[in-house]
Length: 307
Image (cartoon, rainbow, N blue to C red; front, side):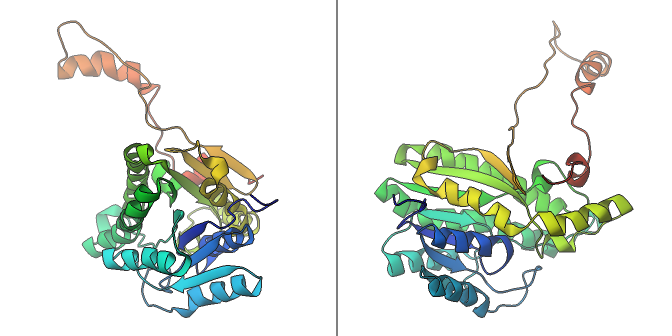
């Protein structure tokens, strides 16, 4: 591996790479020596519309800097579209080494007002999109006995946020999908990890703020949480230096990198003869209460400014 070229000659697909975090990842991957498939439908933050020129602009930037890239305007929400993205990588560059599942949309609404269409749209792009892309790449990874998936989850799913039940469900579902892939494909030397990014983007800009404190946090985020801070972590996870890393959940926030815990038993209680509803209320509930997870939204949980 050449000096400073962490993913030299690897073929990396980045979905949602026309703008924001995805664009920053694609540019850095190319700078680090990768051949990049820049995938972006070119829609707005709600996933409507299409403009292939959005992905092509990033390709042009990469090529102008001396890198190699090709554009794809297919939708990850469609299985055939995802297959075509992977085939673009293989036909253009001869192989595929990493899929970075970054594409996403929002349909924010309080749960009791959420429509089925708003639910379906978010689940299709995020959860189905990750599955479709991962499934399409799996035969190539299995045959070559190598490969890496990097899926984008969110602290909205890991911790919670108001008015995003569809997004939360999709993003937490991606965590389960990633771990399943990591376990099922370990025998083929294929790894799978998740990242929860903290970056100012079109999607984050649509989340409403309800308090002056949240408004201040948003202004700080615009300045400190740039997509360029996010890009090094997924590029690292695509590299051979991350060969021993799989099934993990990371987060990147300005100059900070976090490793998230995953659900494990925190307390247990035993009662000879079994339990009744009354006994649970009298004994188990008091024992568990101090270990209950608080219903705090993500912005309250991360109460300190980006470092």
